[in-house]
Image 1 (cartoon, rainbow, N blue to C red):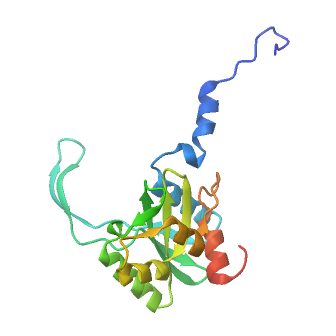
Image 2 (tube, rainbow, N blue to C red; image 1 turned 60 degrees about the vertical axis):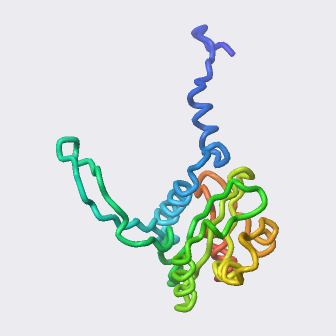
Image 3 (cartoon, rainbow, N blue to C red; image 1 turned 180 degrees about the vertical axis):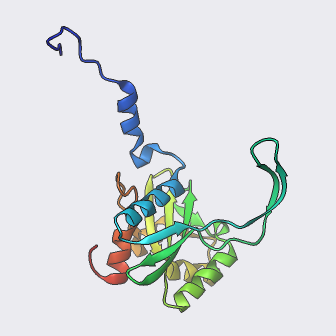
Length: 195
């Protein structure tokens, strides 16, 4: 196409490629970043208050000559889950897991302290679930923590299958804002309605 001044319309490929990069499938291993961006969107829209839980570390050594760079540190205690917050007056607590497998999520990826923590959340009437990202399939599922806890504690399997996750969980819609609309499923499952 030519404009009146005779210049040709040239497409800026960096803009095209940047647009393409916003599709979840092209972001690779940015699963937790996508969850955090979704949580930020929910906060901006005043729908929920959900934050990534920081892992407490003990700093041993700092290089003050290079912008206060931490050079030696260790984890103070075992972590519980990745995210927590409040939605419609209810406490929410959940863990994000990724797997390259196309058929299952290994229980090896779930430490016992996370199971213990999520059991406590459920016991105190909180909402507890897992977001599971199947990297190769580019699919994210929300599944209630009680289902994972039961399968984990039963001990007859070393994993939970994708088939079980599909039958007992929910495929999370992927988009631009929010990137992962997990709150829509929380509303449906735990509040029986729509946002």
